Structures are given as structure tokens and as C-alpha cells.
Image (cartoon, rainbow, N blue to C red; front, side, top):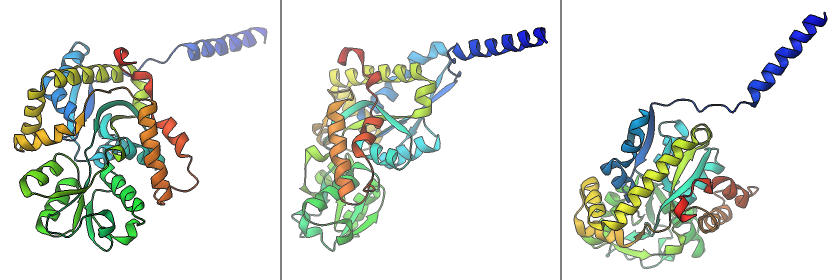
Length: 323
């Protein structure tokens, strides 16, 4: 019996010792990212191959998937189709509150990428004119959140208008055809509508546009922190390149969108790339949007929006030079 007891205790000690050894990250052969025309830095990163170059010695390949809007990027993340994706900050918050376990780790842009758009002959000059009108919008994106806040500011709700749910590009087409009276626009399609069709941005508010951010699935973040760090480092290379070579940034967007250079120039006028770190500034912007959504009934009344924002933003991967 003493021998059996000693053997059993030795076995338990061995288990304890194993538990004390940090778990090794699972080996991966591929990392999956999105690219998006509303995330210009992603286009430079994809075109220049900075991430592929950084991961080549480790034998890790990069697979790219296009996101047509924040809603699609967040759907891809929730379904495990990508590991890191591009969205608006407020869209990421709404997704997290609705059970999509994402974290914000990087800010790729500070844009004014959304406004409310109408045709010049539609007779709409202010948000109050949207009562009873048809509005194209992509649910779960910054333009959708922008629309809700704009309606709220005019004493209206979504129920006071007829929302037509379409992806961003289809929303522009619906406006052009006269199928809708207004559109919650997104660049670069919004810039194209301005320049090519003379459409009017009748309601703008740069402060109500939340930041362009990179989202990571929580499980991937926990399992592959070094890989996430490598991605952010490559993003920093691409961002620095874009700032130093604005003509290359324009060319990458023109190639991806097939839109004329004046349209892309208009988009880039509204896109600022100088603040990659995430922290209090993004938190304040996202929280303001979240509280507006809560007031509008989109986020449940009992939700602690501040706590949700705190759980969303993870600054530990901020670029070292920008900390």
C-alpha cells in the first residue's frame, strides 16, 4: 500500500508539473485575412506581399478573402472563414454584443467613409426629409449605424422610413435607378456616386464615423499571439509605405475597384492613416455609437455598453513605436 500510495502521489505531481508548462501554440500552415476597398492599407499589404515575406521562413501561407462590408468581414470571422478581418469599430461592438467573440487590435484608418446620399433631383435636403422614404442600407455596418444616429438626431427612428437592405454597391445602384430615395453610402462607391452621377451627400458628420479597425477571433488571438503580432507588423509596413507613396496607394485602389482616379482621390481625401494604435480615442468613439444604438433600441437596454467596449479593444498589440 505505501508503494501504491507513493506511486499515486508521484503521478499527481507529474500531472501538476505538466499543467505548469505553458501550452505551446498549435502549429498553423496558413493564416486567413480579408482585403477590402474600404481598407486601403489592406490593398497595399496584399499587393506588396509584406506578410508573405515575413511568414515565408515559418512555412506559413497567406490566404486572402474580399470583404464587401463590415457585416461580411464579421460574418467570416464568426464562421471561422478568416482569422483577421476589417470592419468599422461600432460594427465590431454590435457584433460582439450579439455573441461574435472578436477583439479589436489595430486601427487601419480614421475615415469619413459614410454619409447620407441622395440624387440631386430627389427633393431631400435634410435628415427630416427621410420620413416615409426608401433608404438603401447594409445592416450591421458603419453606414447603418450612422443612419440610425442621424435619424435619431432628427427625432425619427428606422420605423419612420422604409429600409431596403442591400450590400453597399447594390445600394448605390438602387439609388441610381430610382429604386430608393436615399442611400447610407460607403466609400469608394459613395465617392463614385458624387463624381460620376452628381449625387449629393446631404448629411455628413465626420465624428459619427467610427474607426476602421482590424478584428481578430478571440480563440485565434489566444492561440496565436505571435502570429497576430506579425500581421500587425506587416500592416505597419504597408501603412508606412502608403503614407510615403500616395501614388501607389491610389494605384492599388484603382486596380481593386476599377474606378477612375478622381473617384479614388476623393475617397482618400476622407481617409486618414496616421493613428494605428487602439485605445481611449477609439473606445470613446465606439461607445458613443453604442449608446446611440442602445437608445434607439438596437442594443438591449440592459447591456453595459462601456464594459462591452472595454472587452472589445485589446491594446497589447499596438505597434511599439506608436505606444
